[in-house]
Length: 208
Image 1 (cartoon, rainbow, N blue to C red):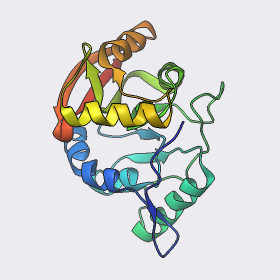
Image 2: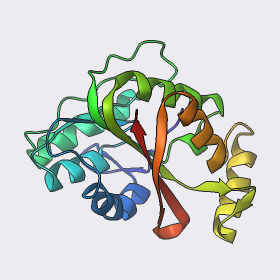
Image 3: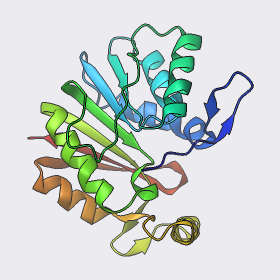
């Protein structure tokens, strides 16, 4: 499992341009699906830009970052310190392939831009873990680029898929119907599919 590192800043944090570009549009969508209170966990938080931004936008919620990479967890810690957010918990070391996640039960879970830079079985491992750690009636948001019924929704996504496959044959955009089917088999029902800017898609699931 790999999350974009981006570039390193002078103060030692990592910066992801992709996270910076899409944090606002994801944040706006979250306003329609987040609970009014409770714990929100992000799986594969990367440098921490998303979760800090979301925590600032929704201070009434408690936010739990997770990340397997030691350097990126260090970046999350530094971002928490600089933001002075009091509603972001220390990051948890979590790899989706771990059989036991050291994560409390959450009211909402987010994952963005991970499954296309991971082997195919990471998707099932991720969704299994989400199902284990999401309260009944809780929601899960999956964000990123997908293949739609065997087709790419843009030339850019087609080229991106080819680049990923050339880098690692196990990487690549996933078929959206396959993700929905795996989720359904685990008890996560697709509630909404939202087309996002830059040819990305958000899938919102409800744990039945």
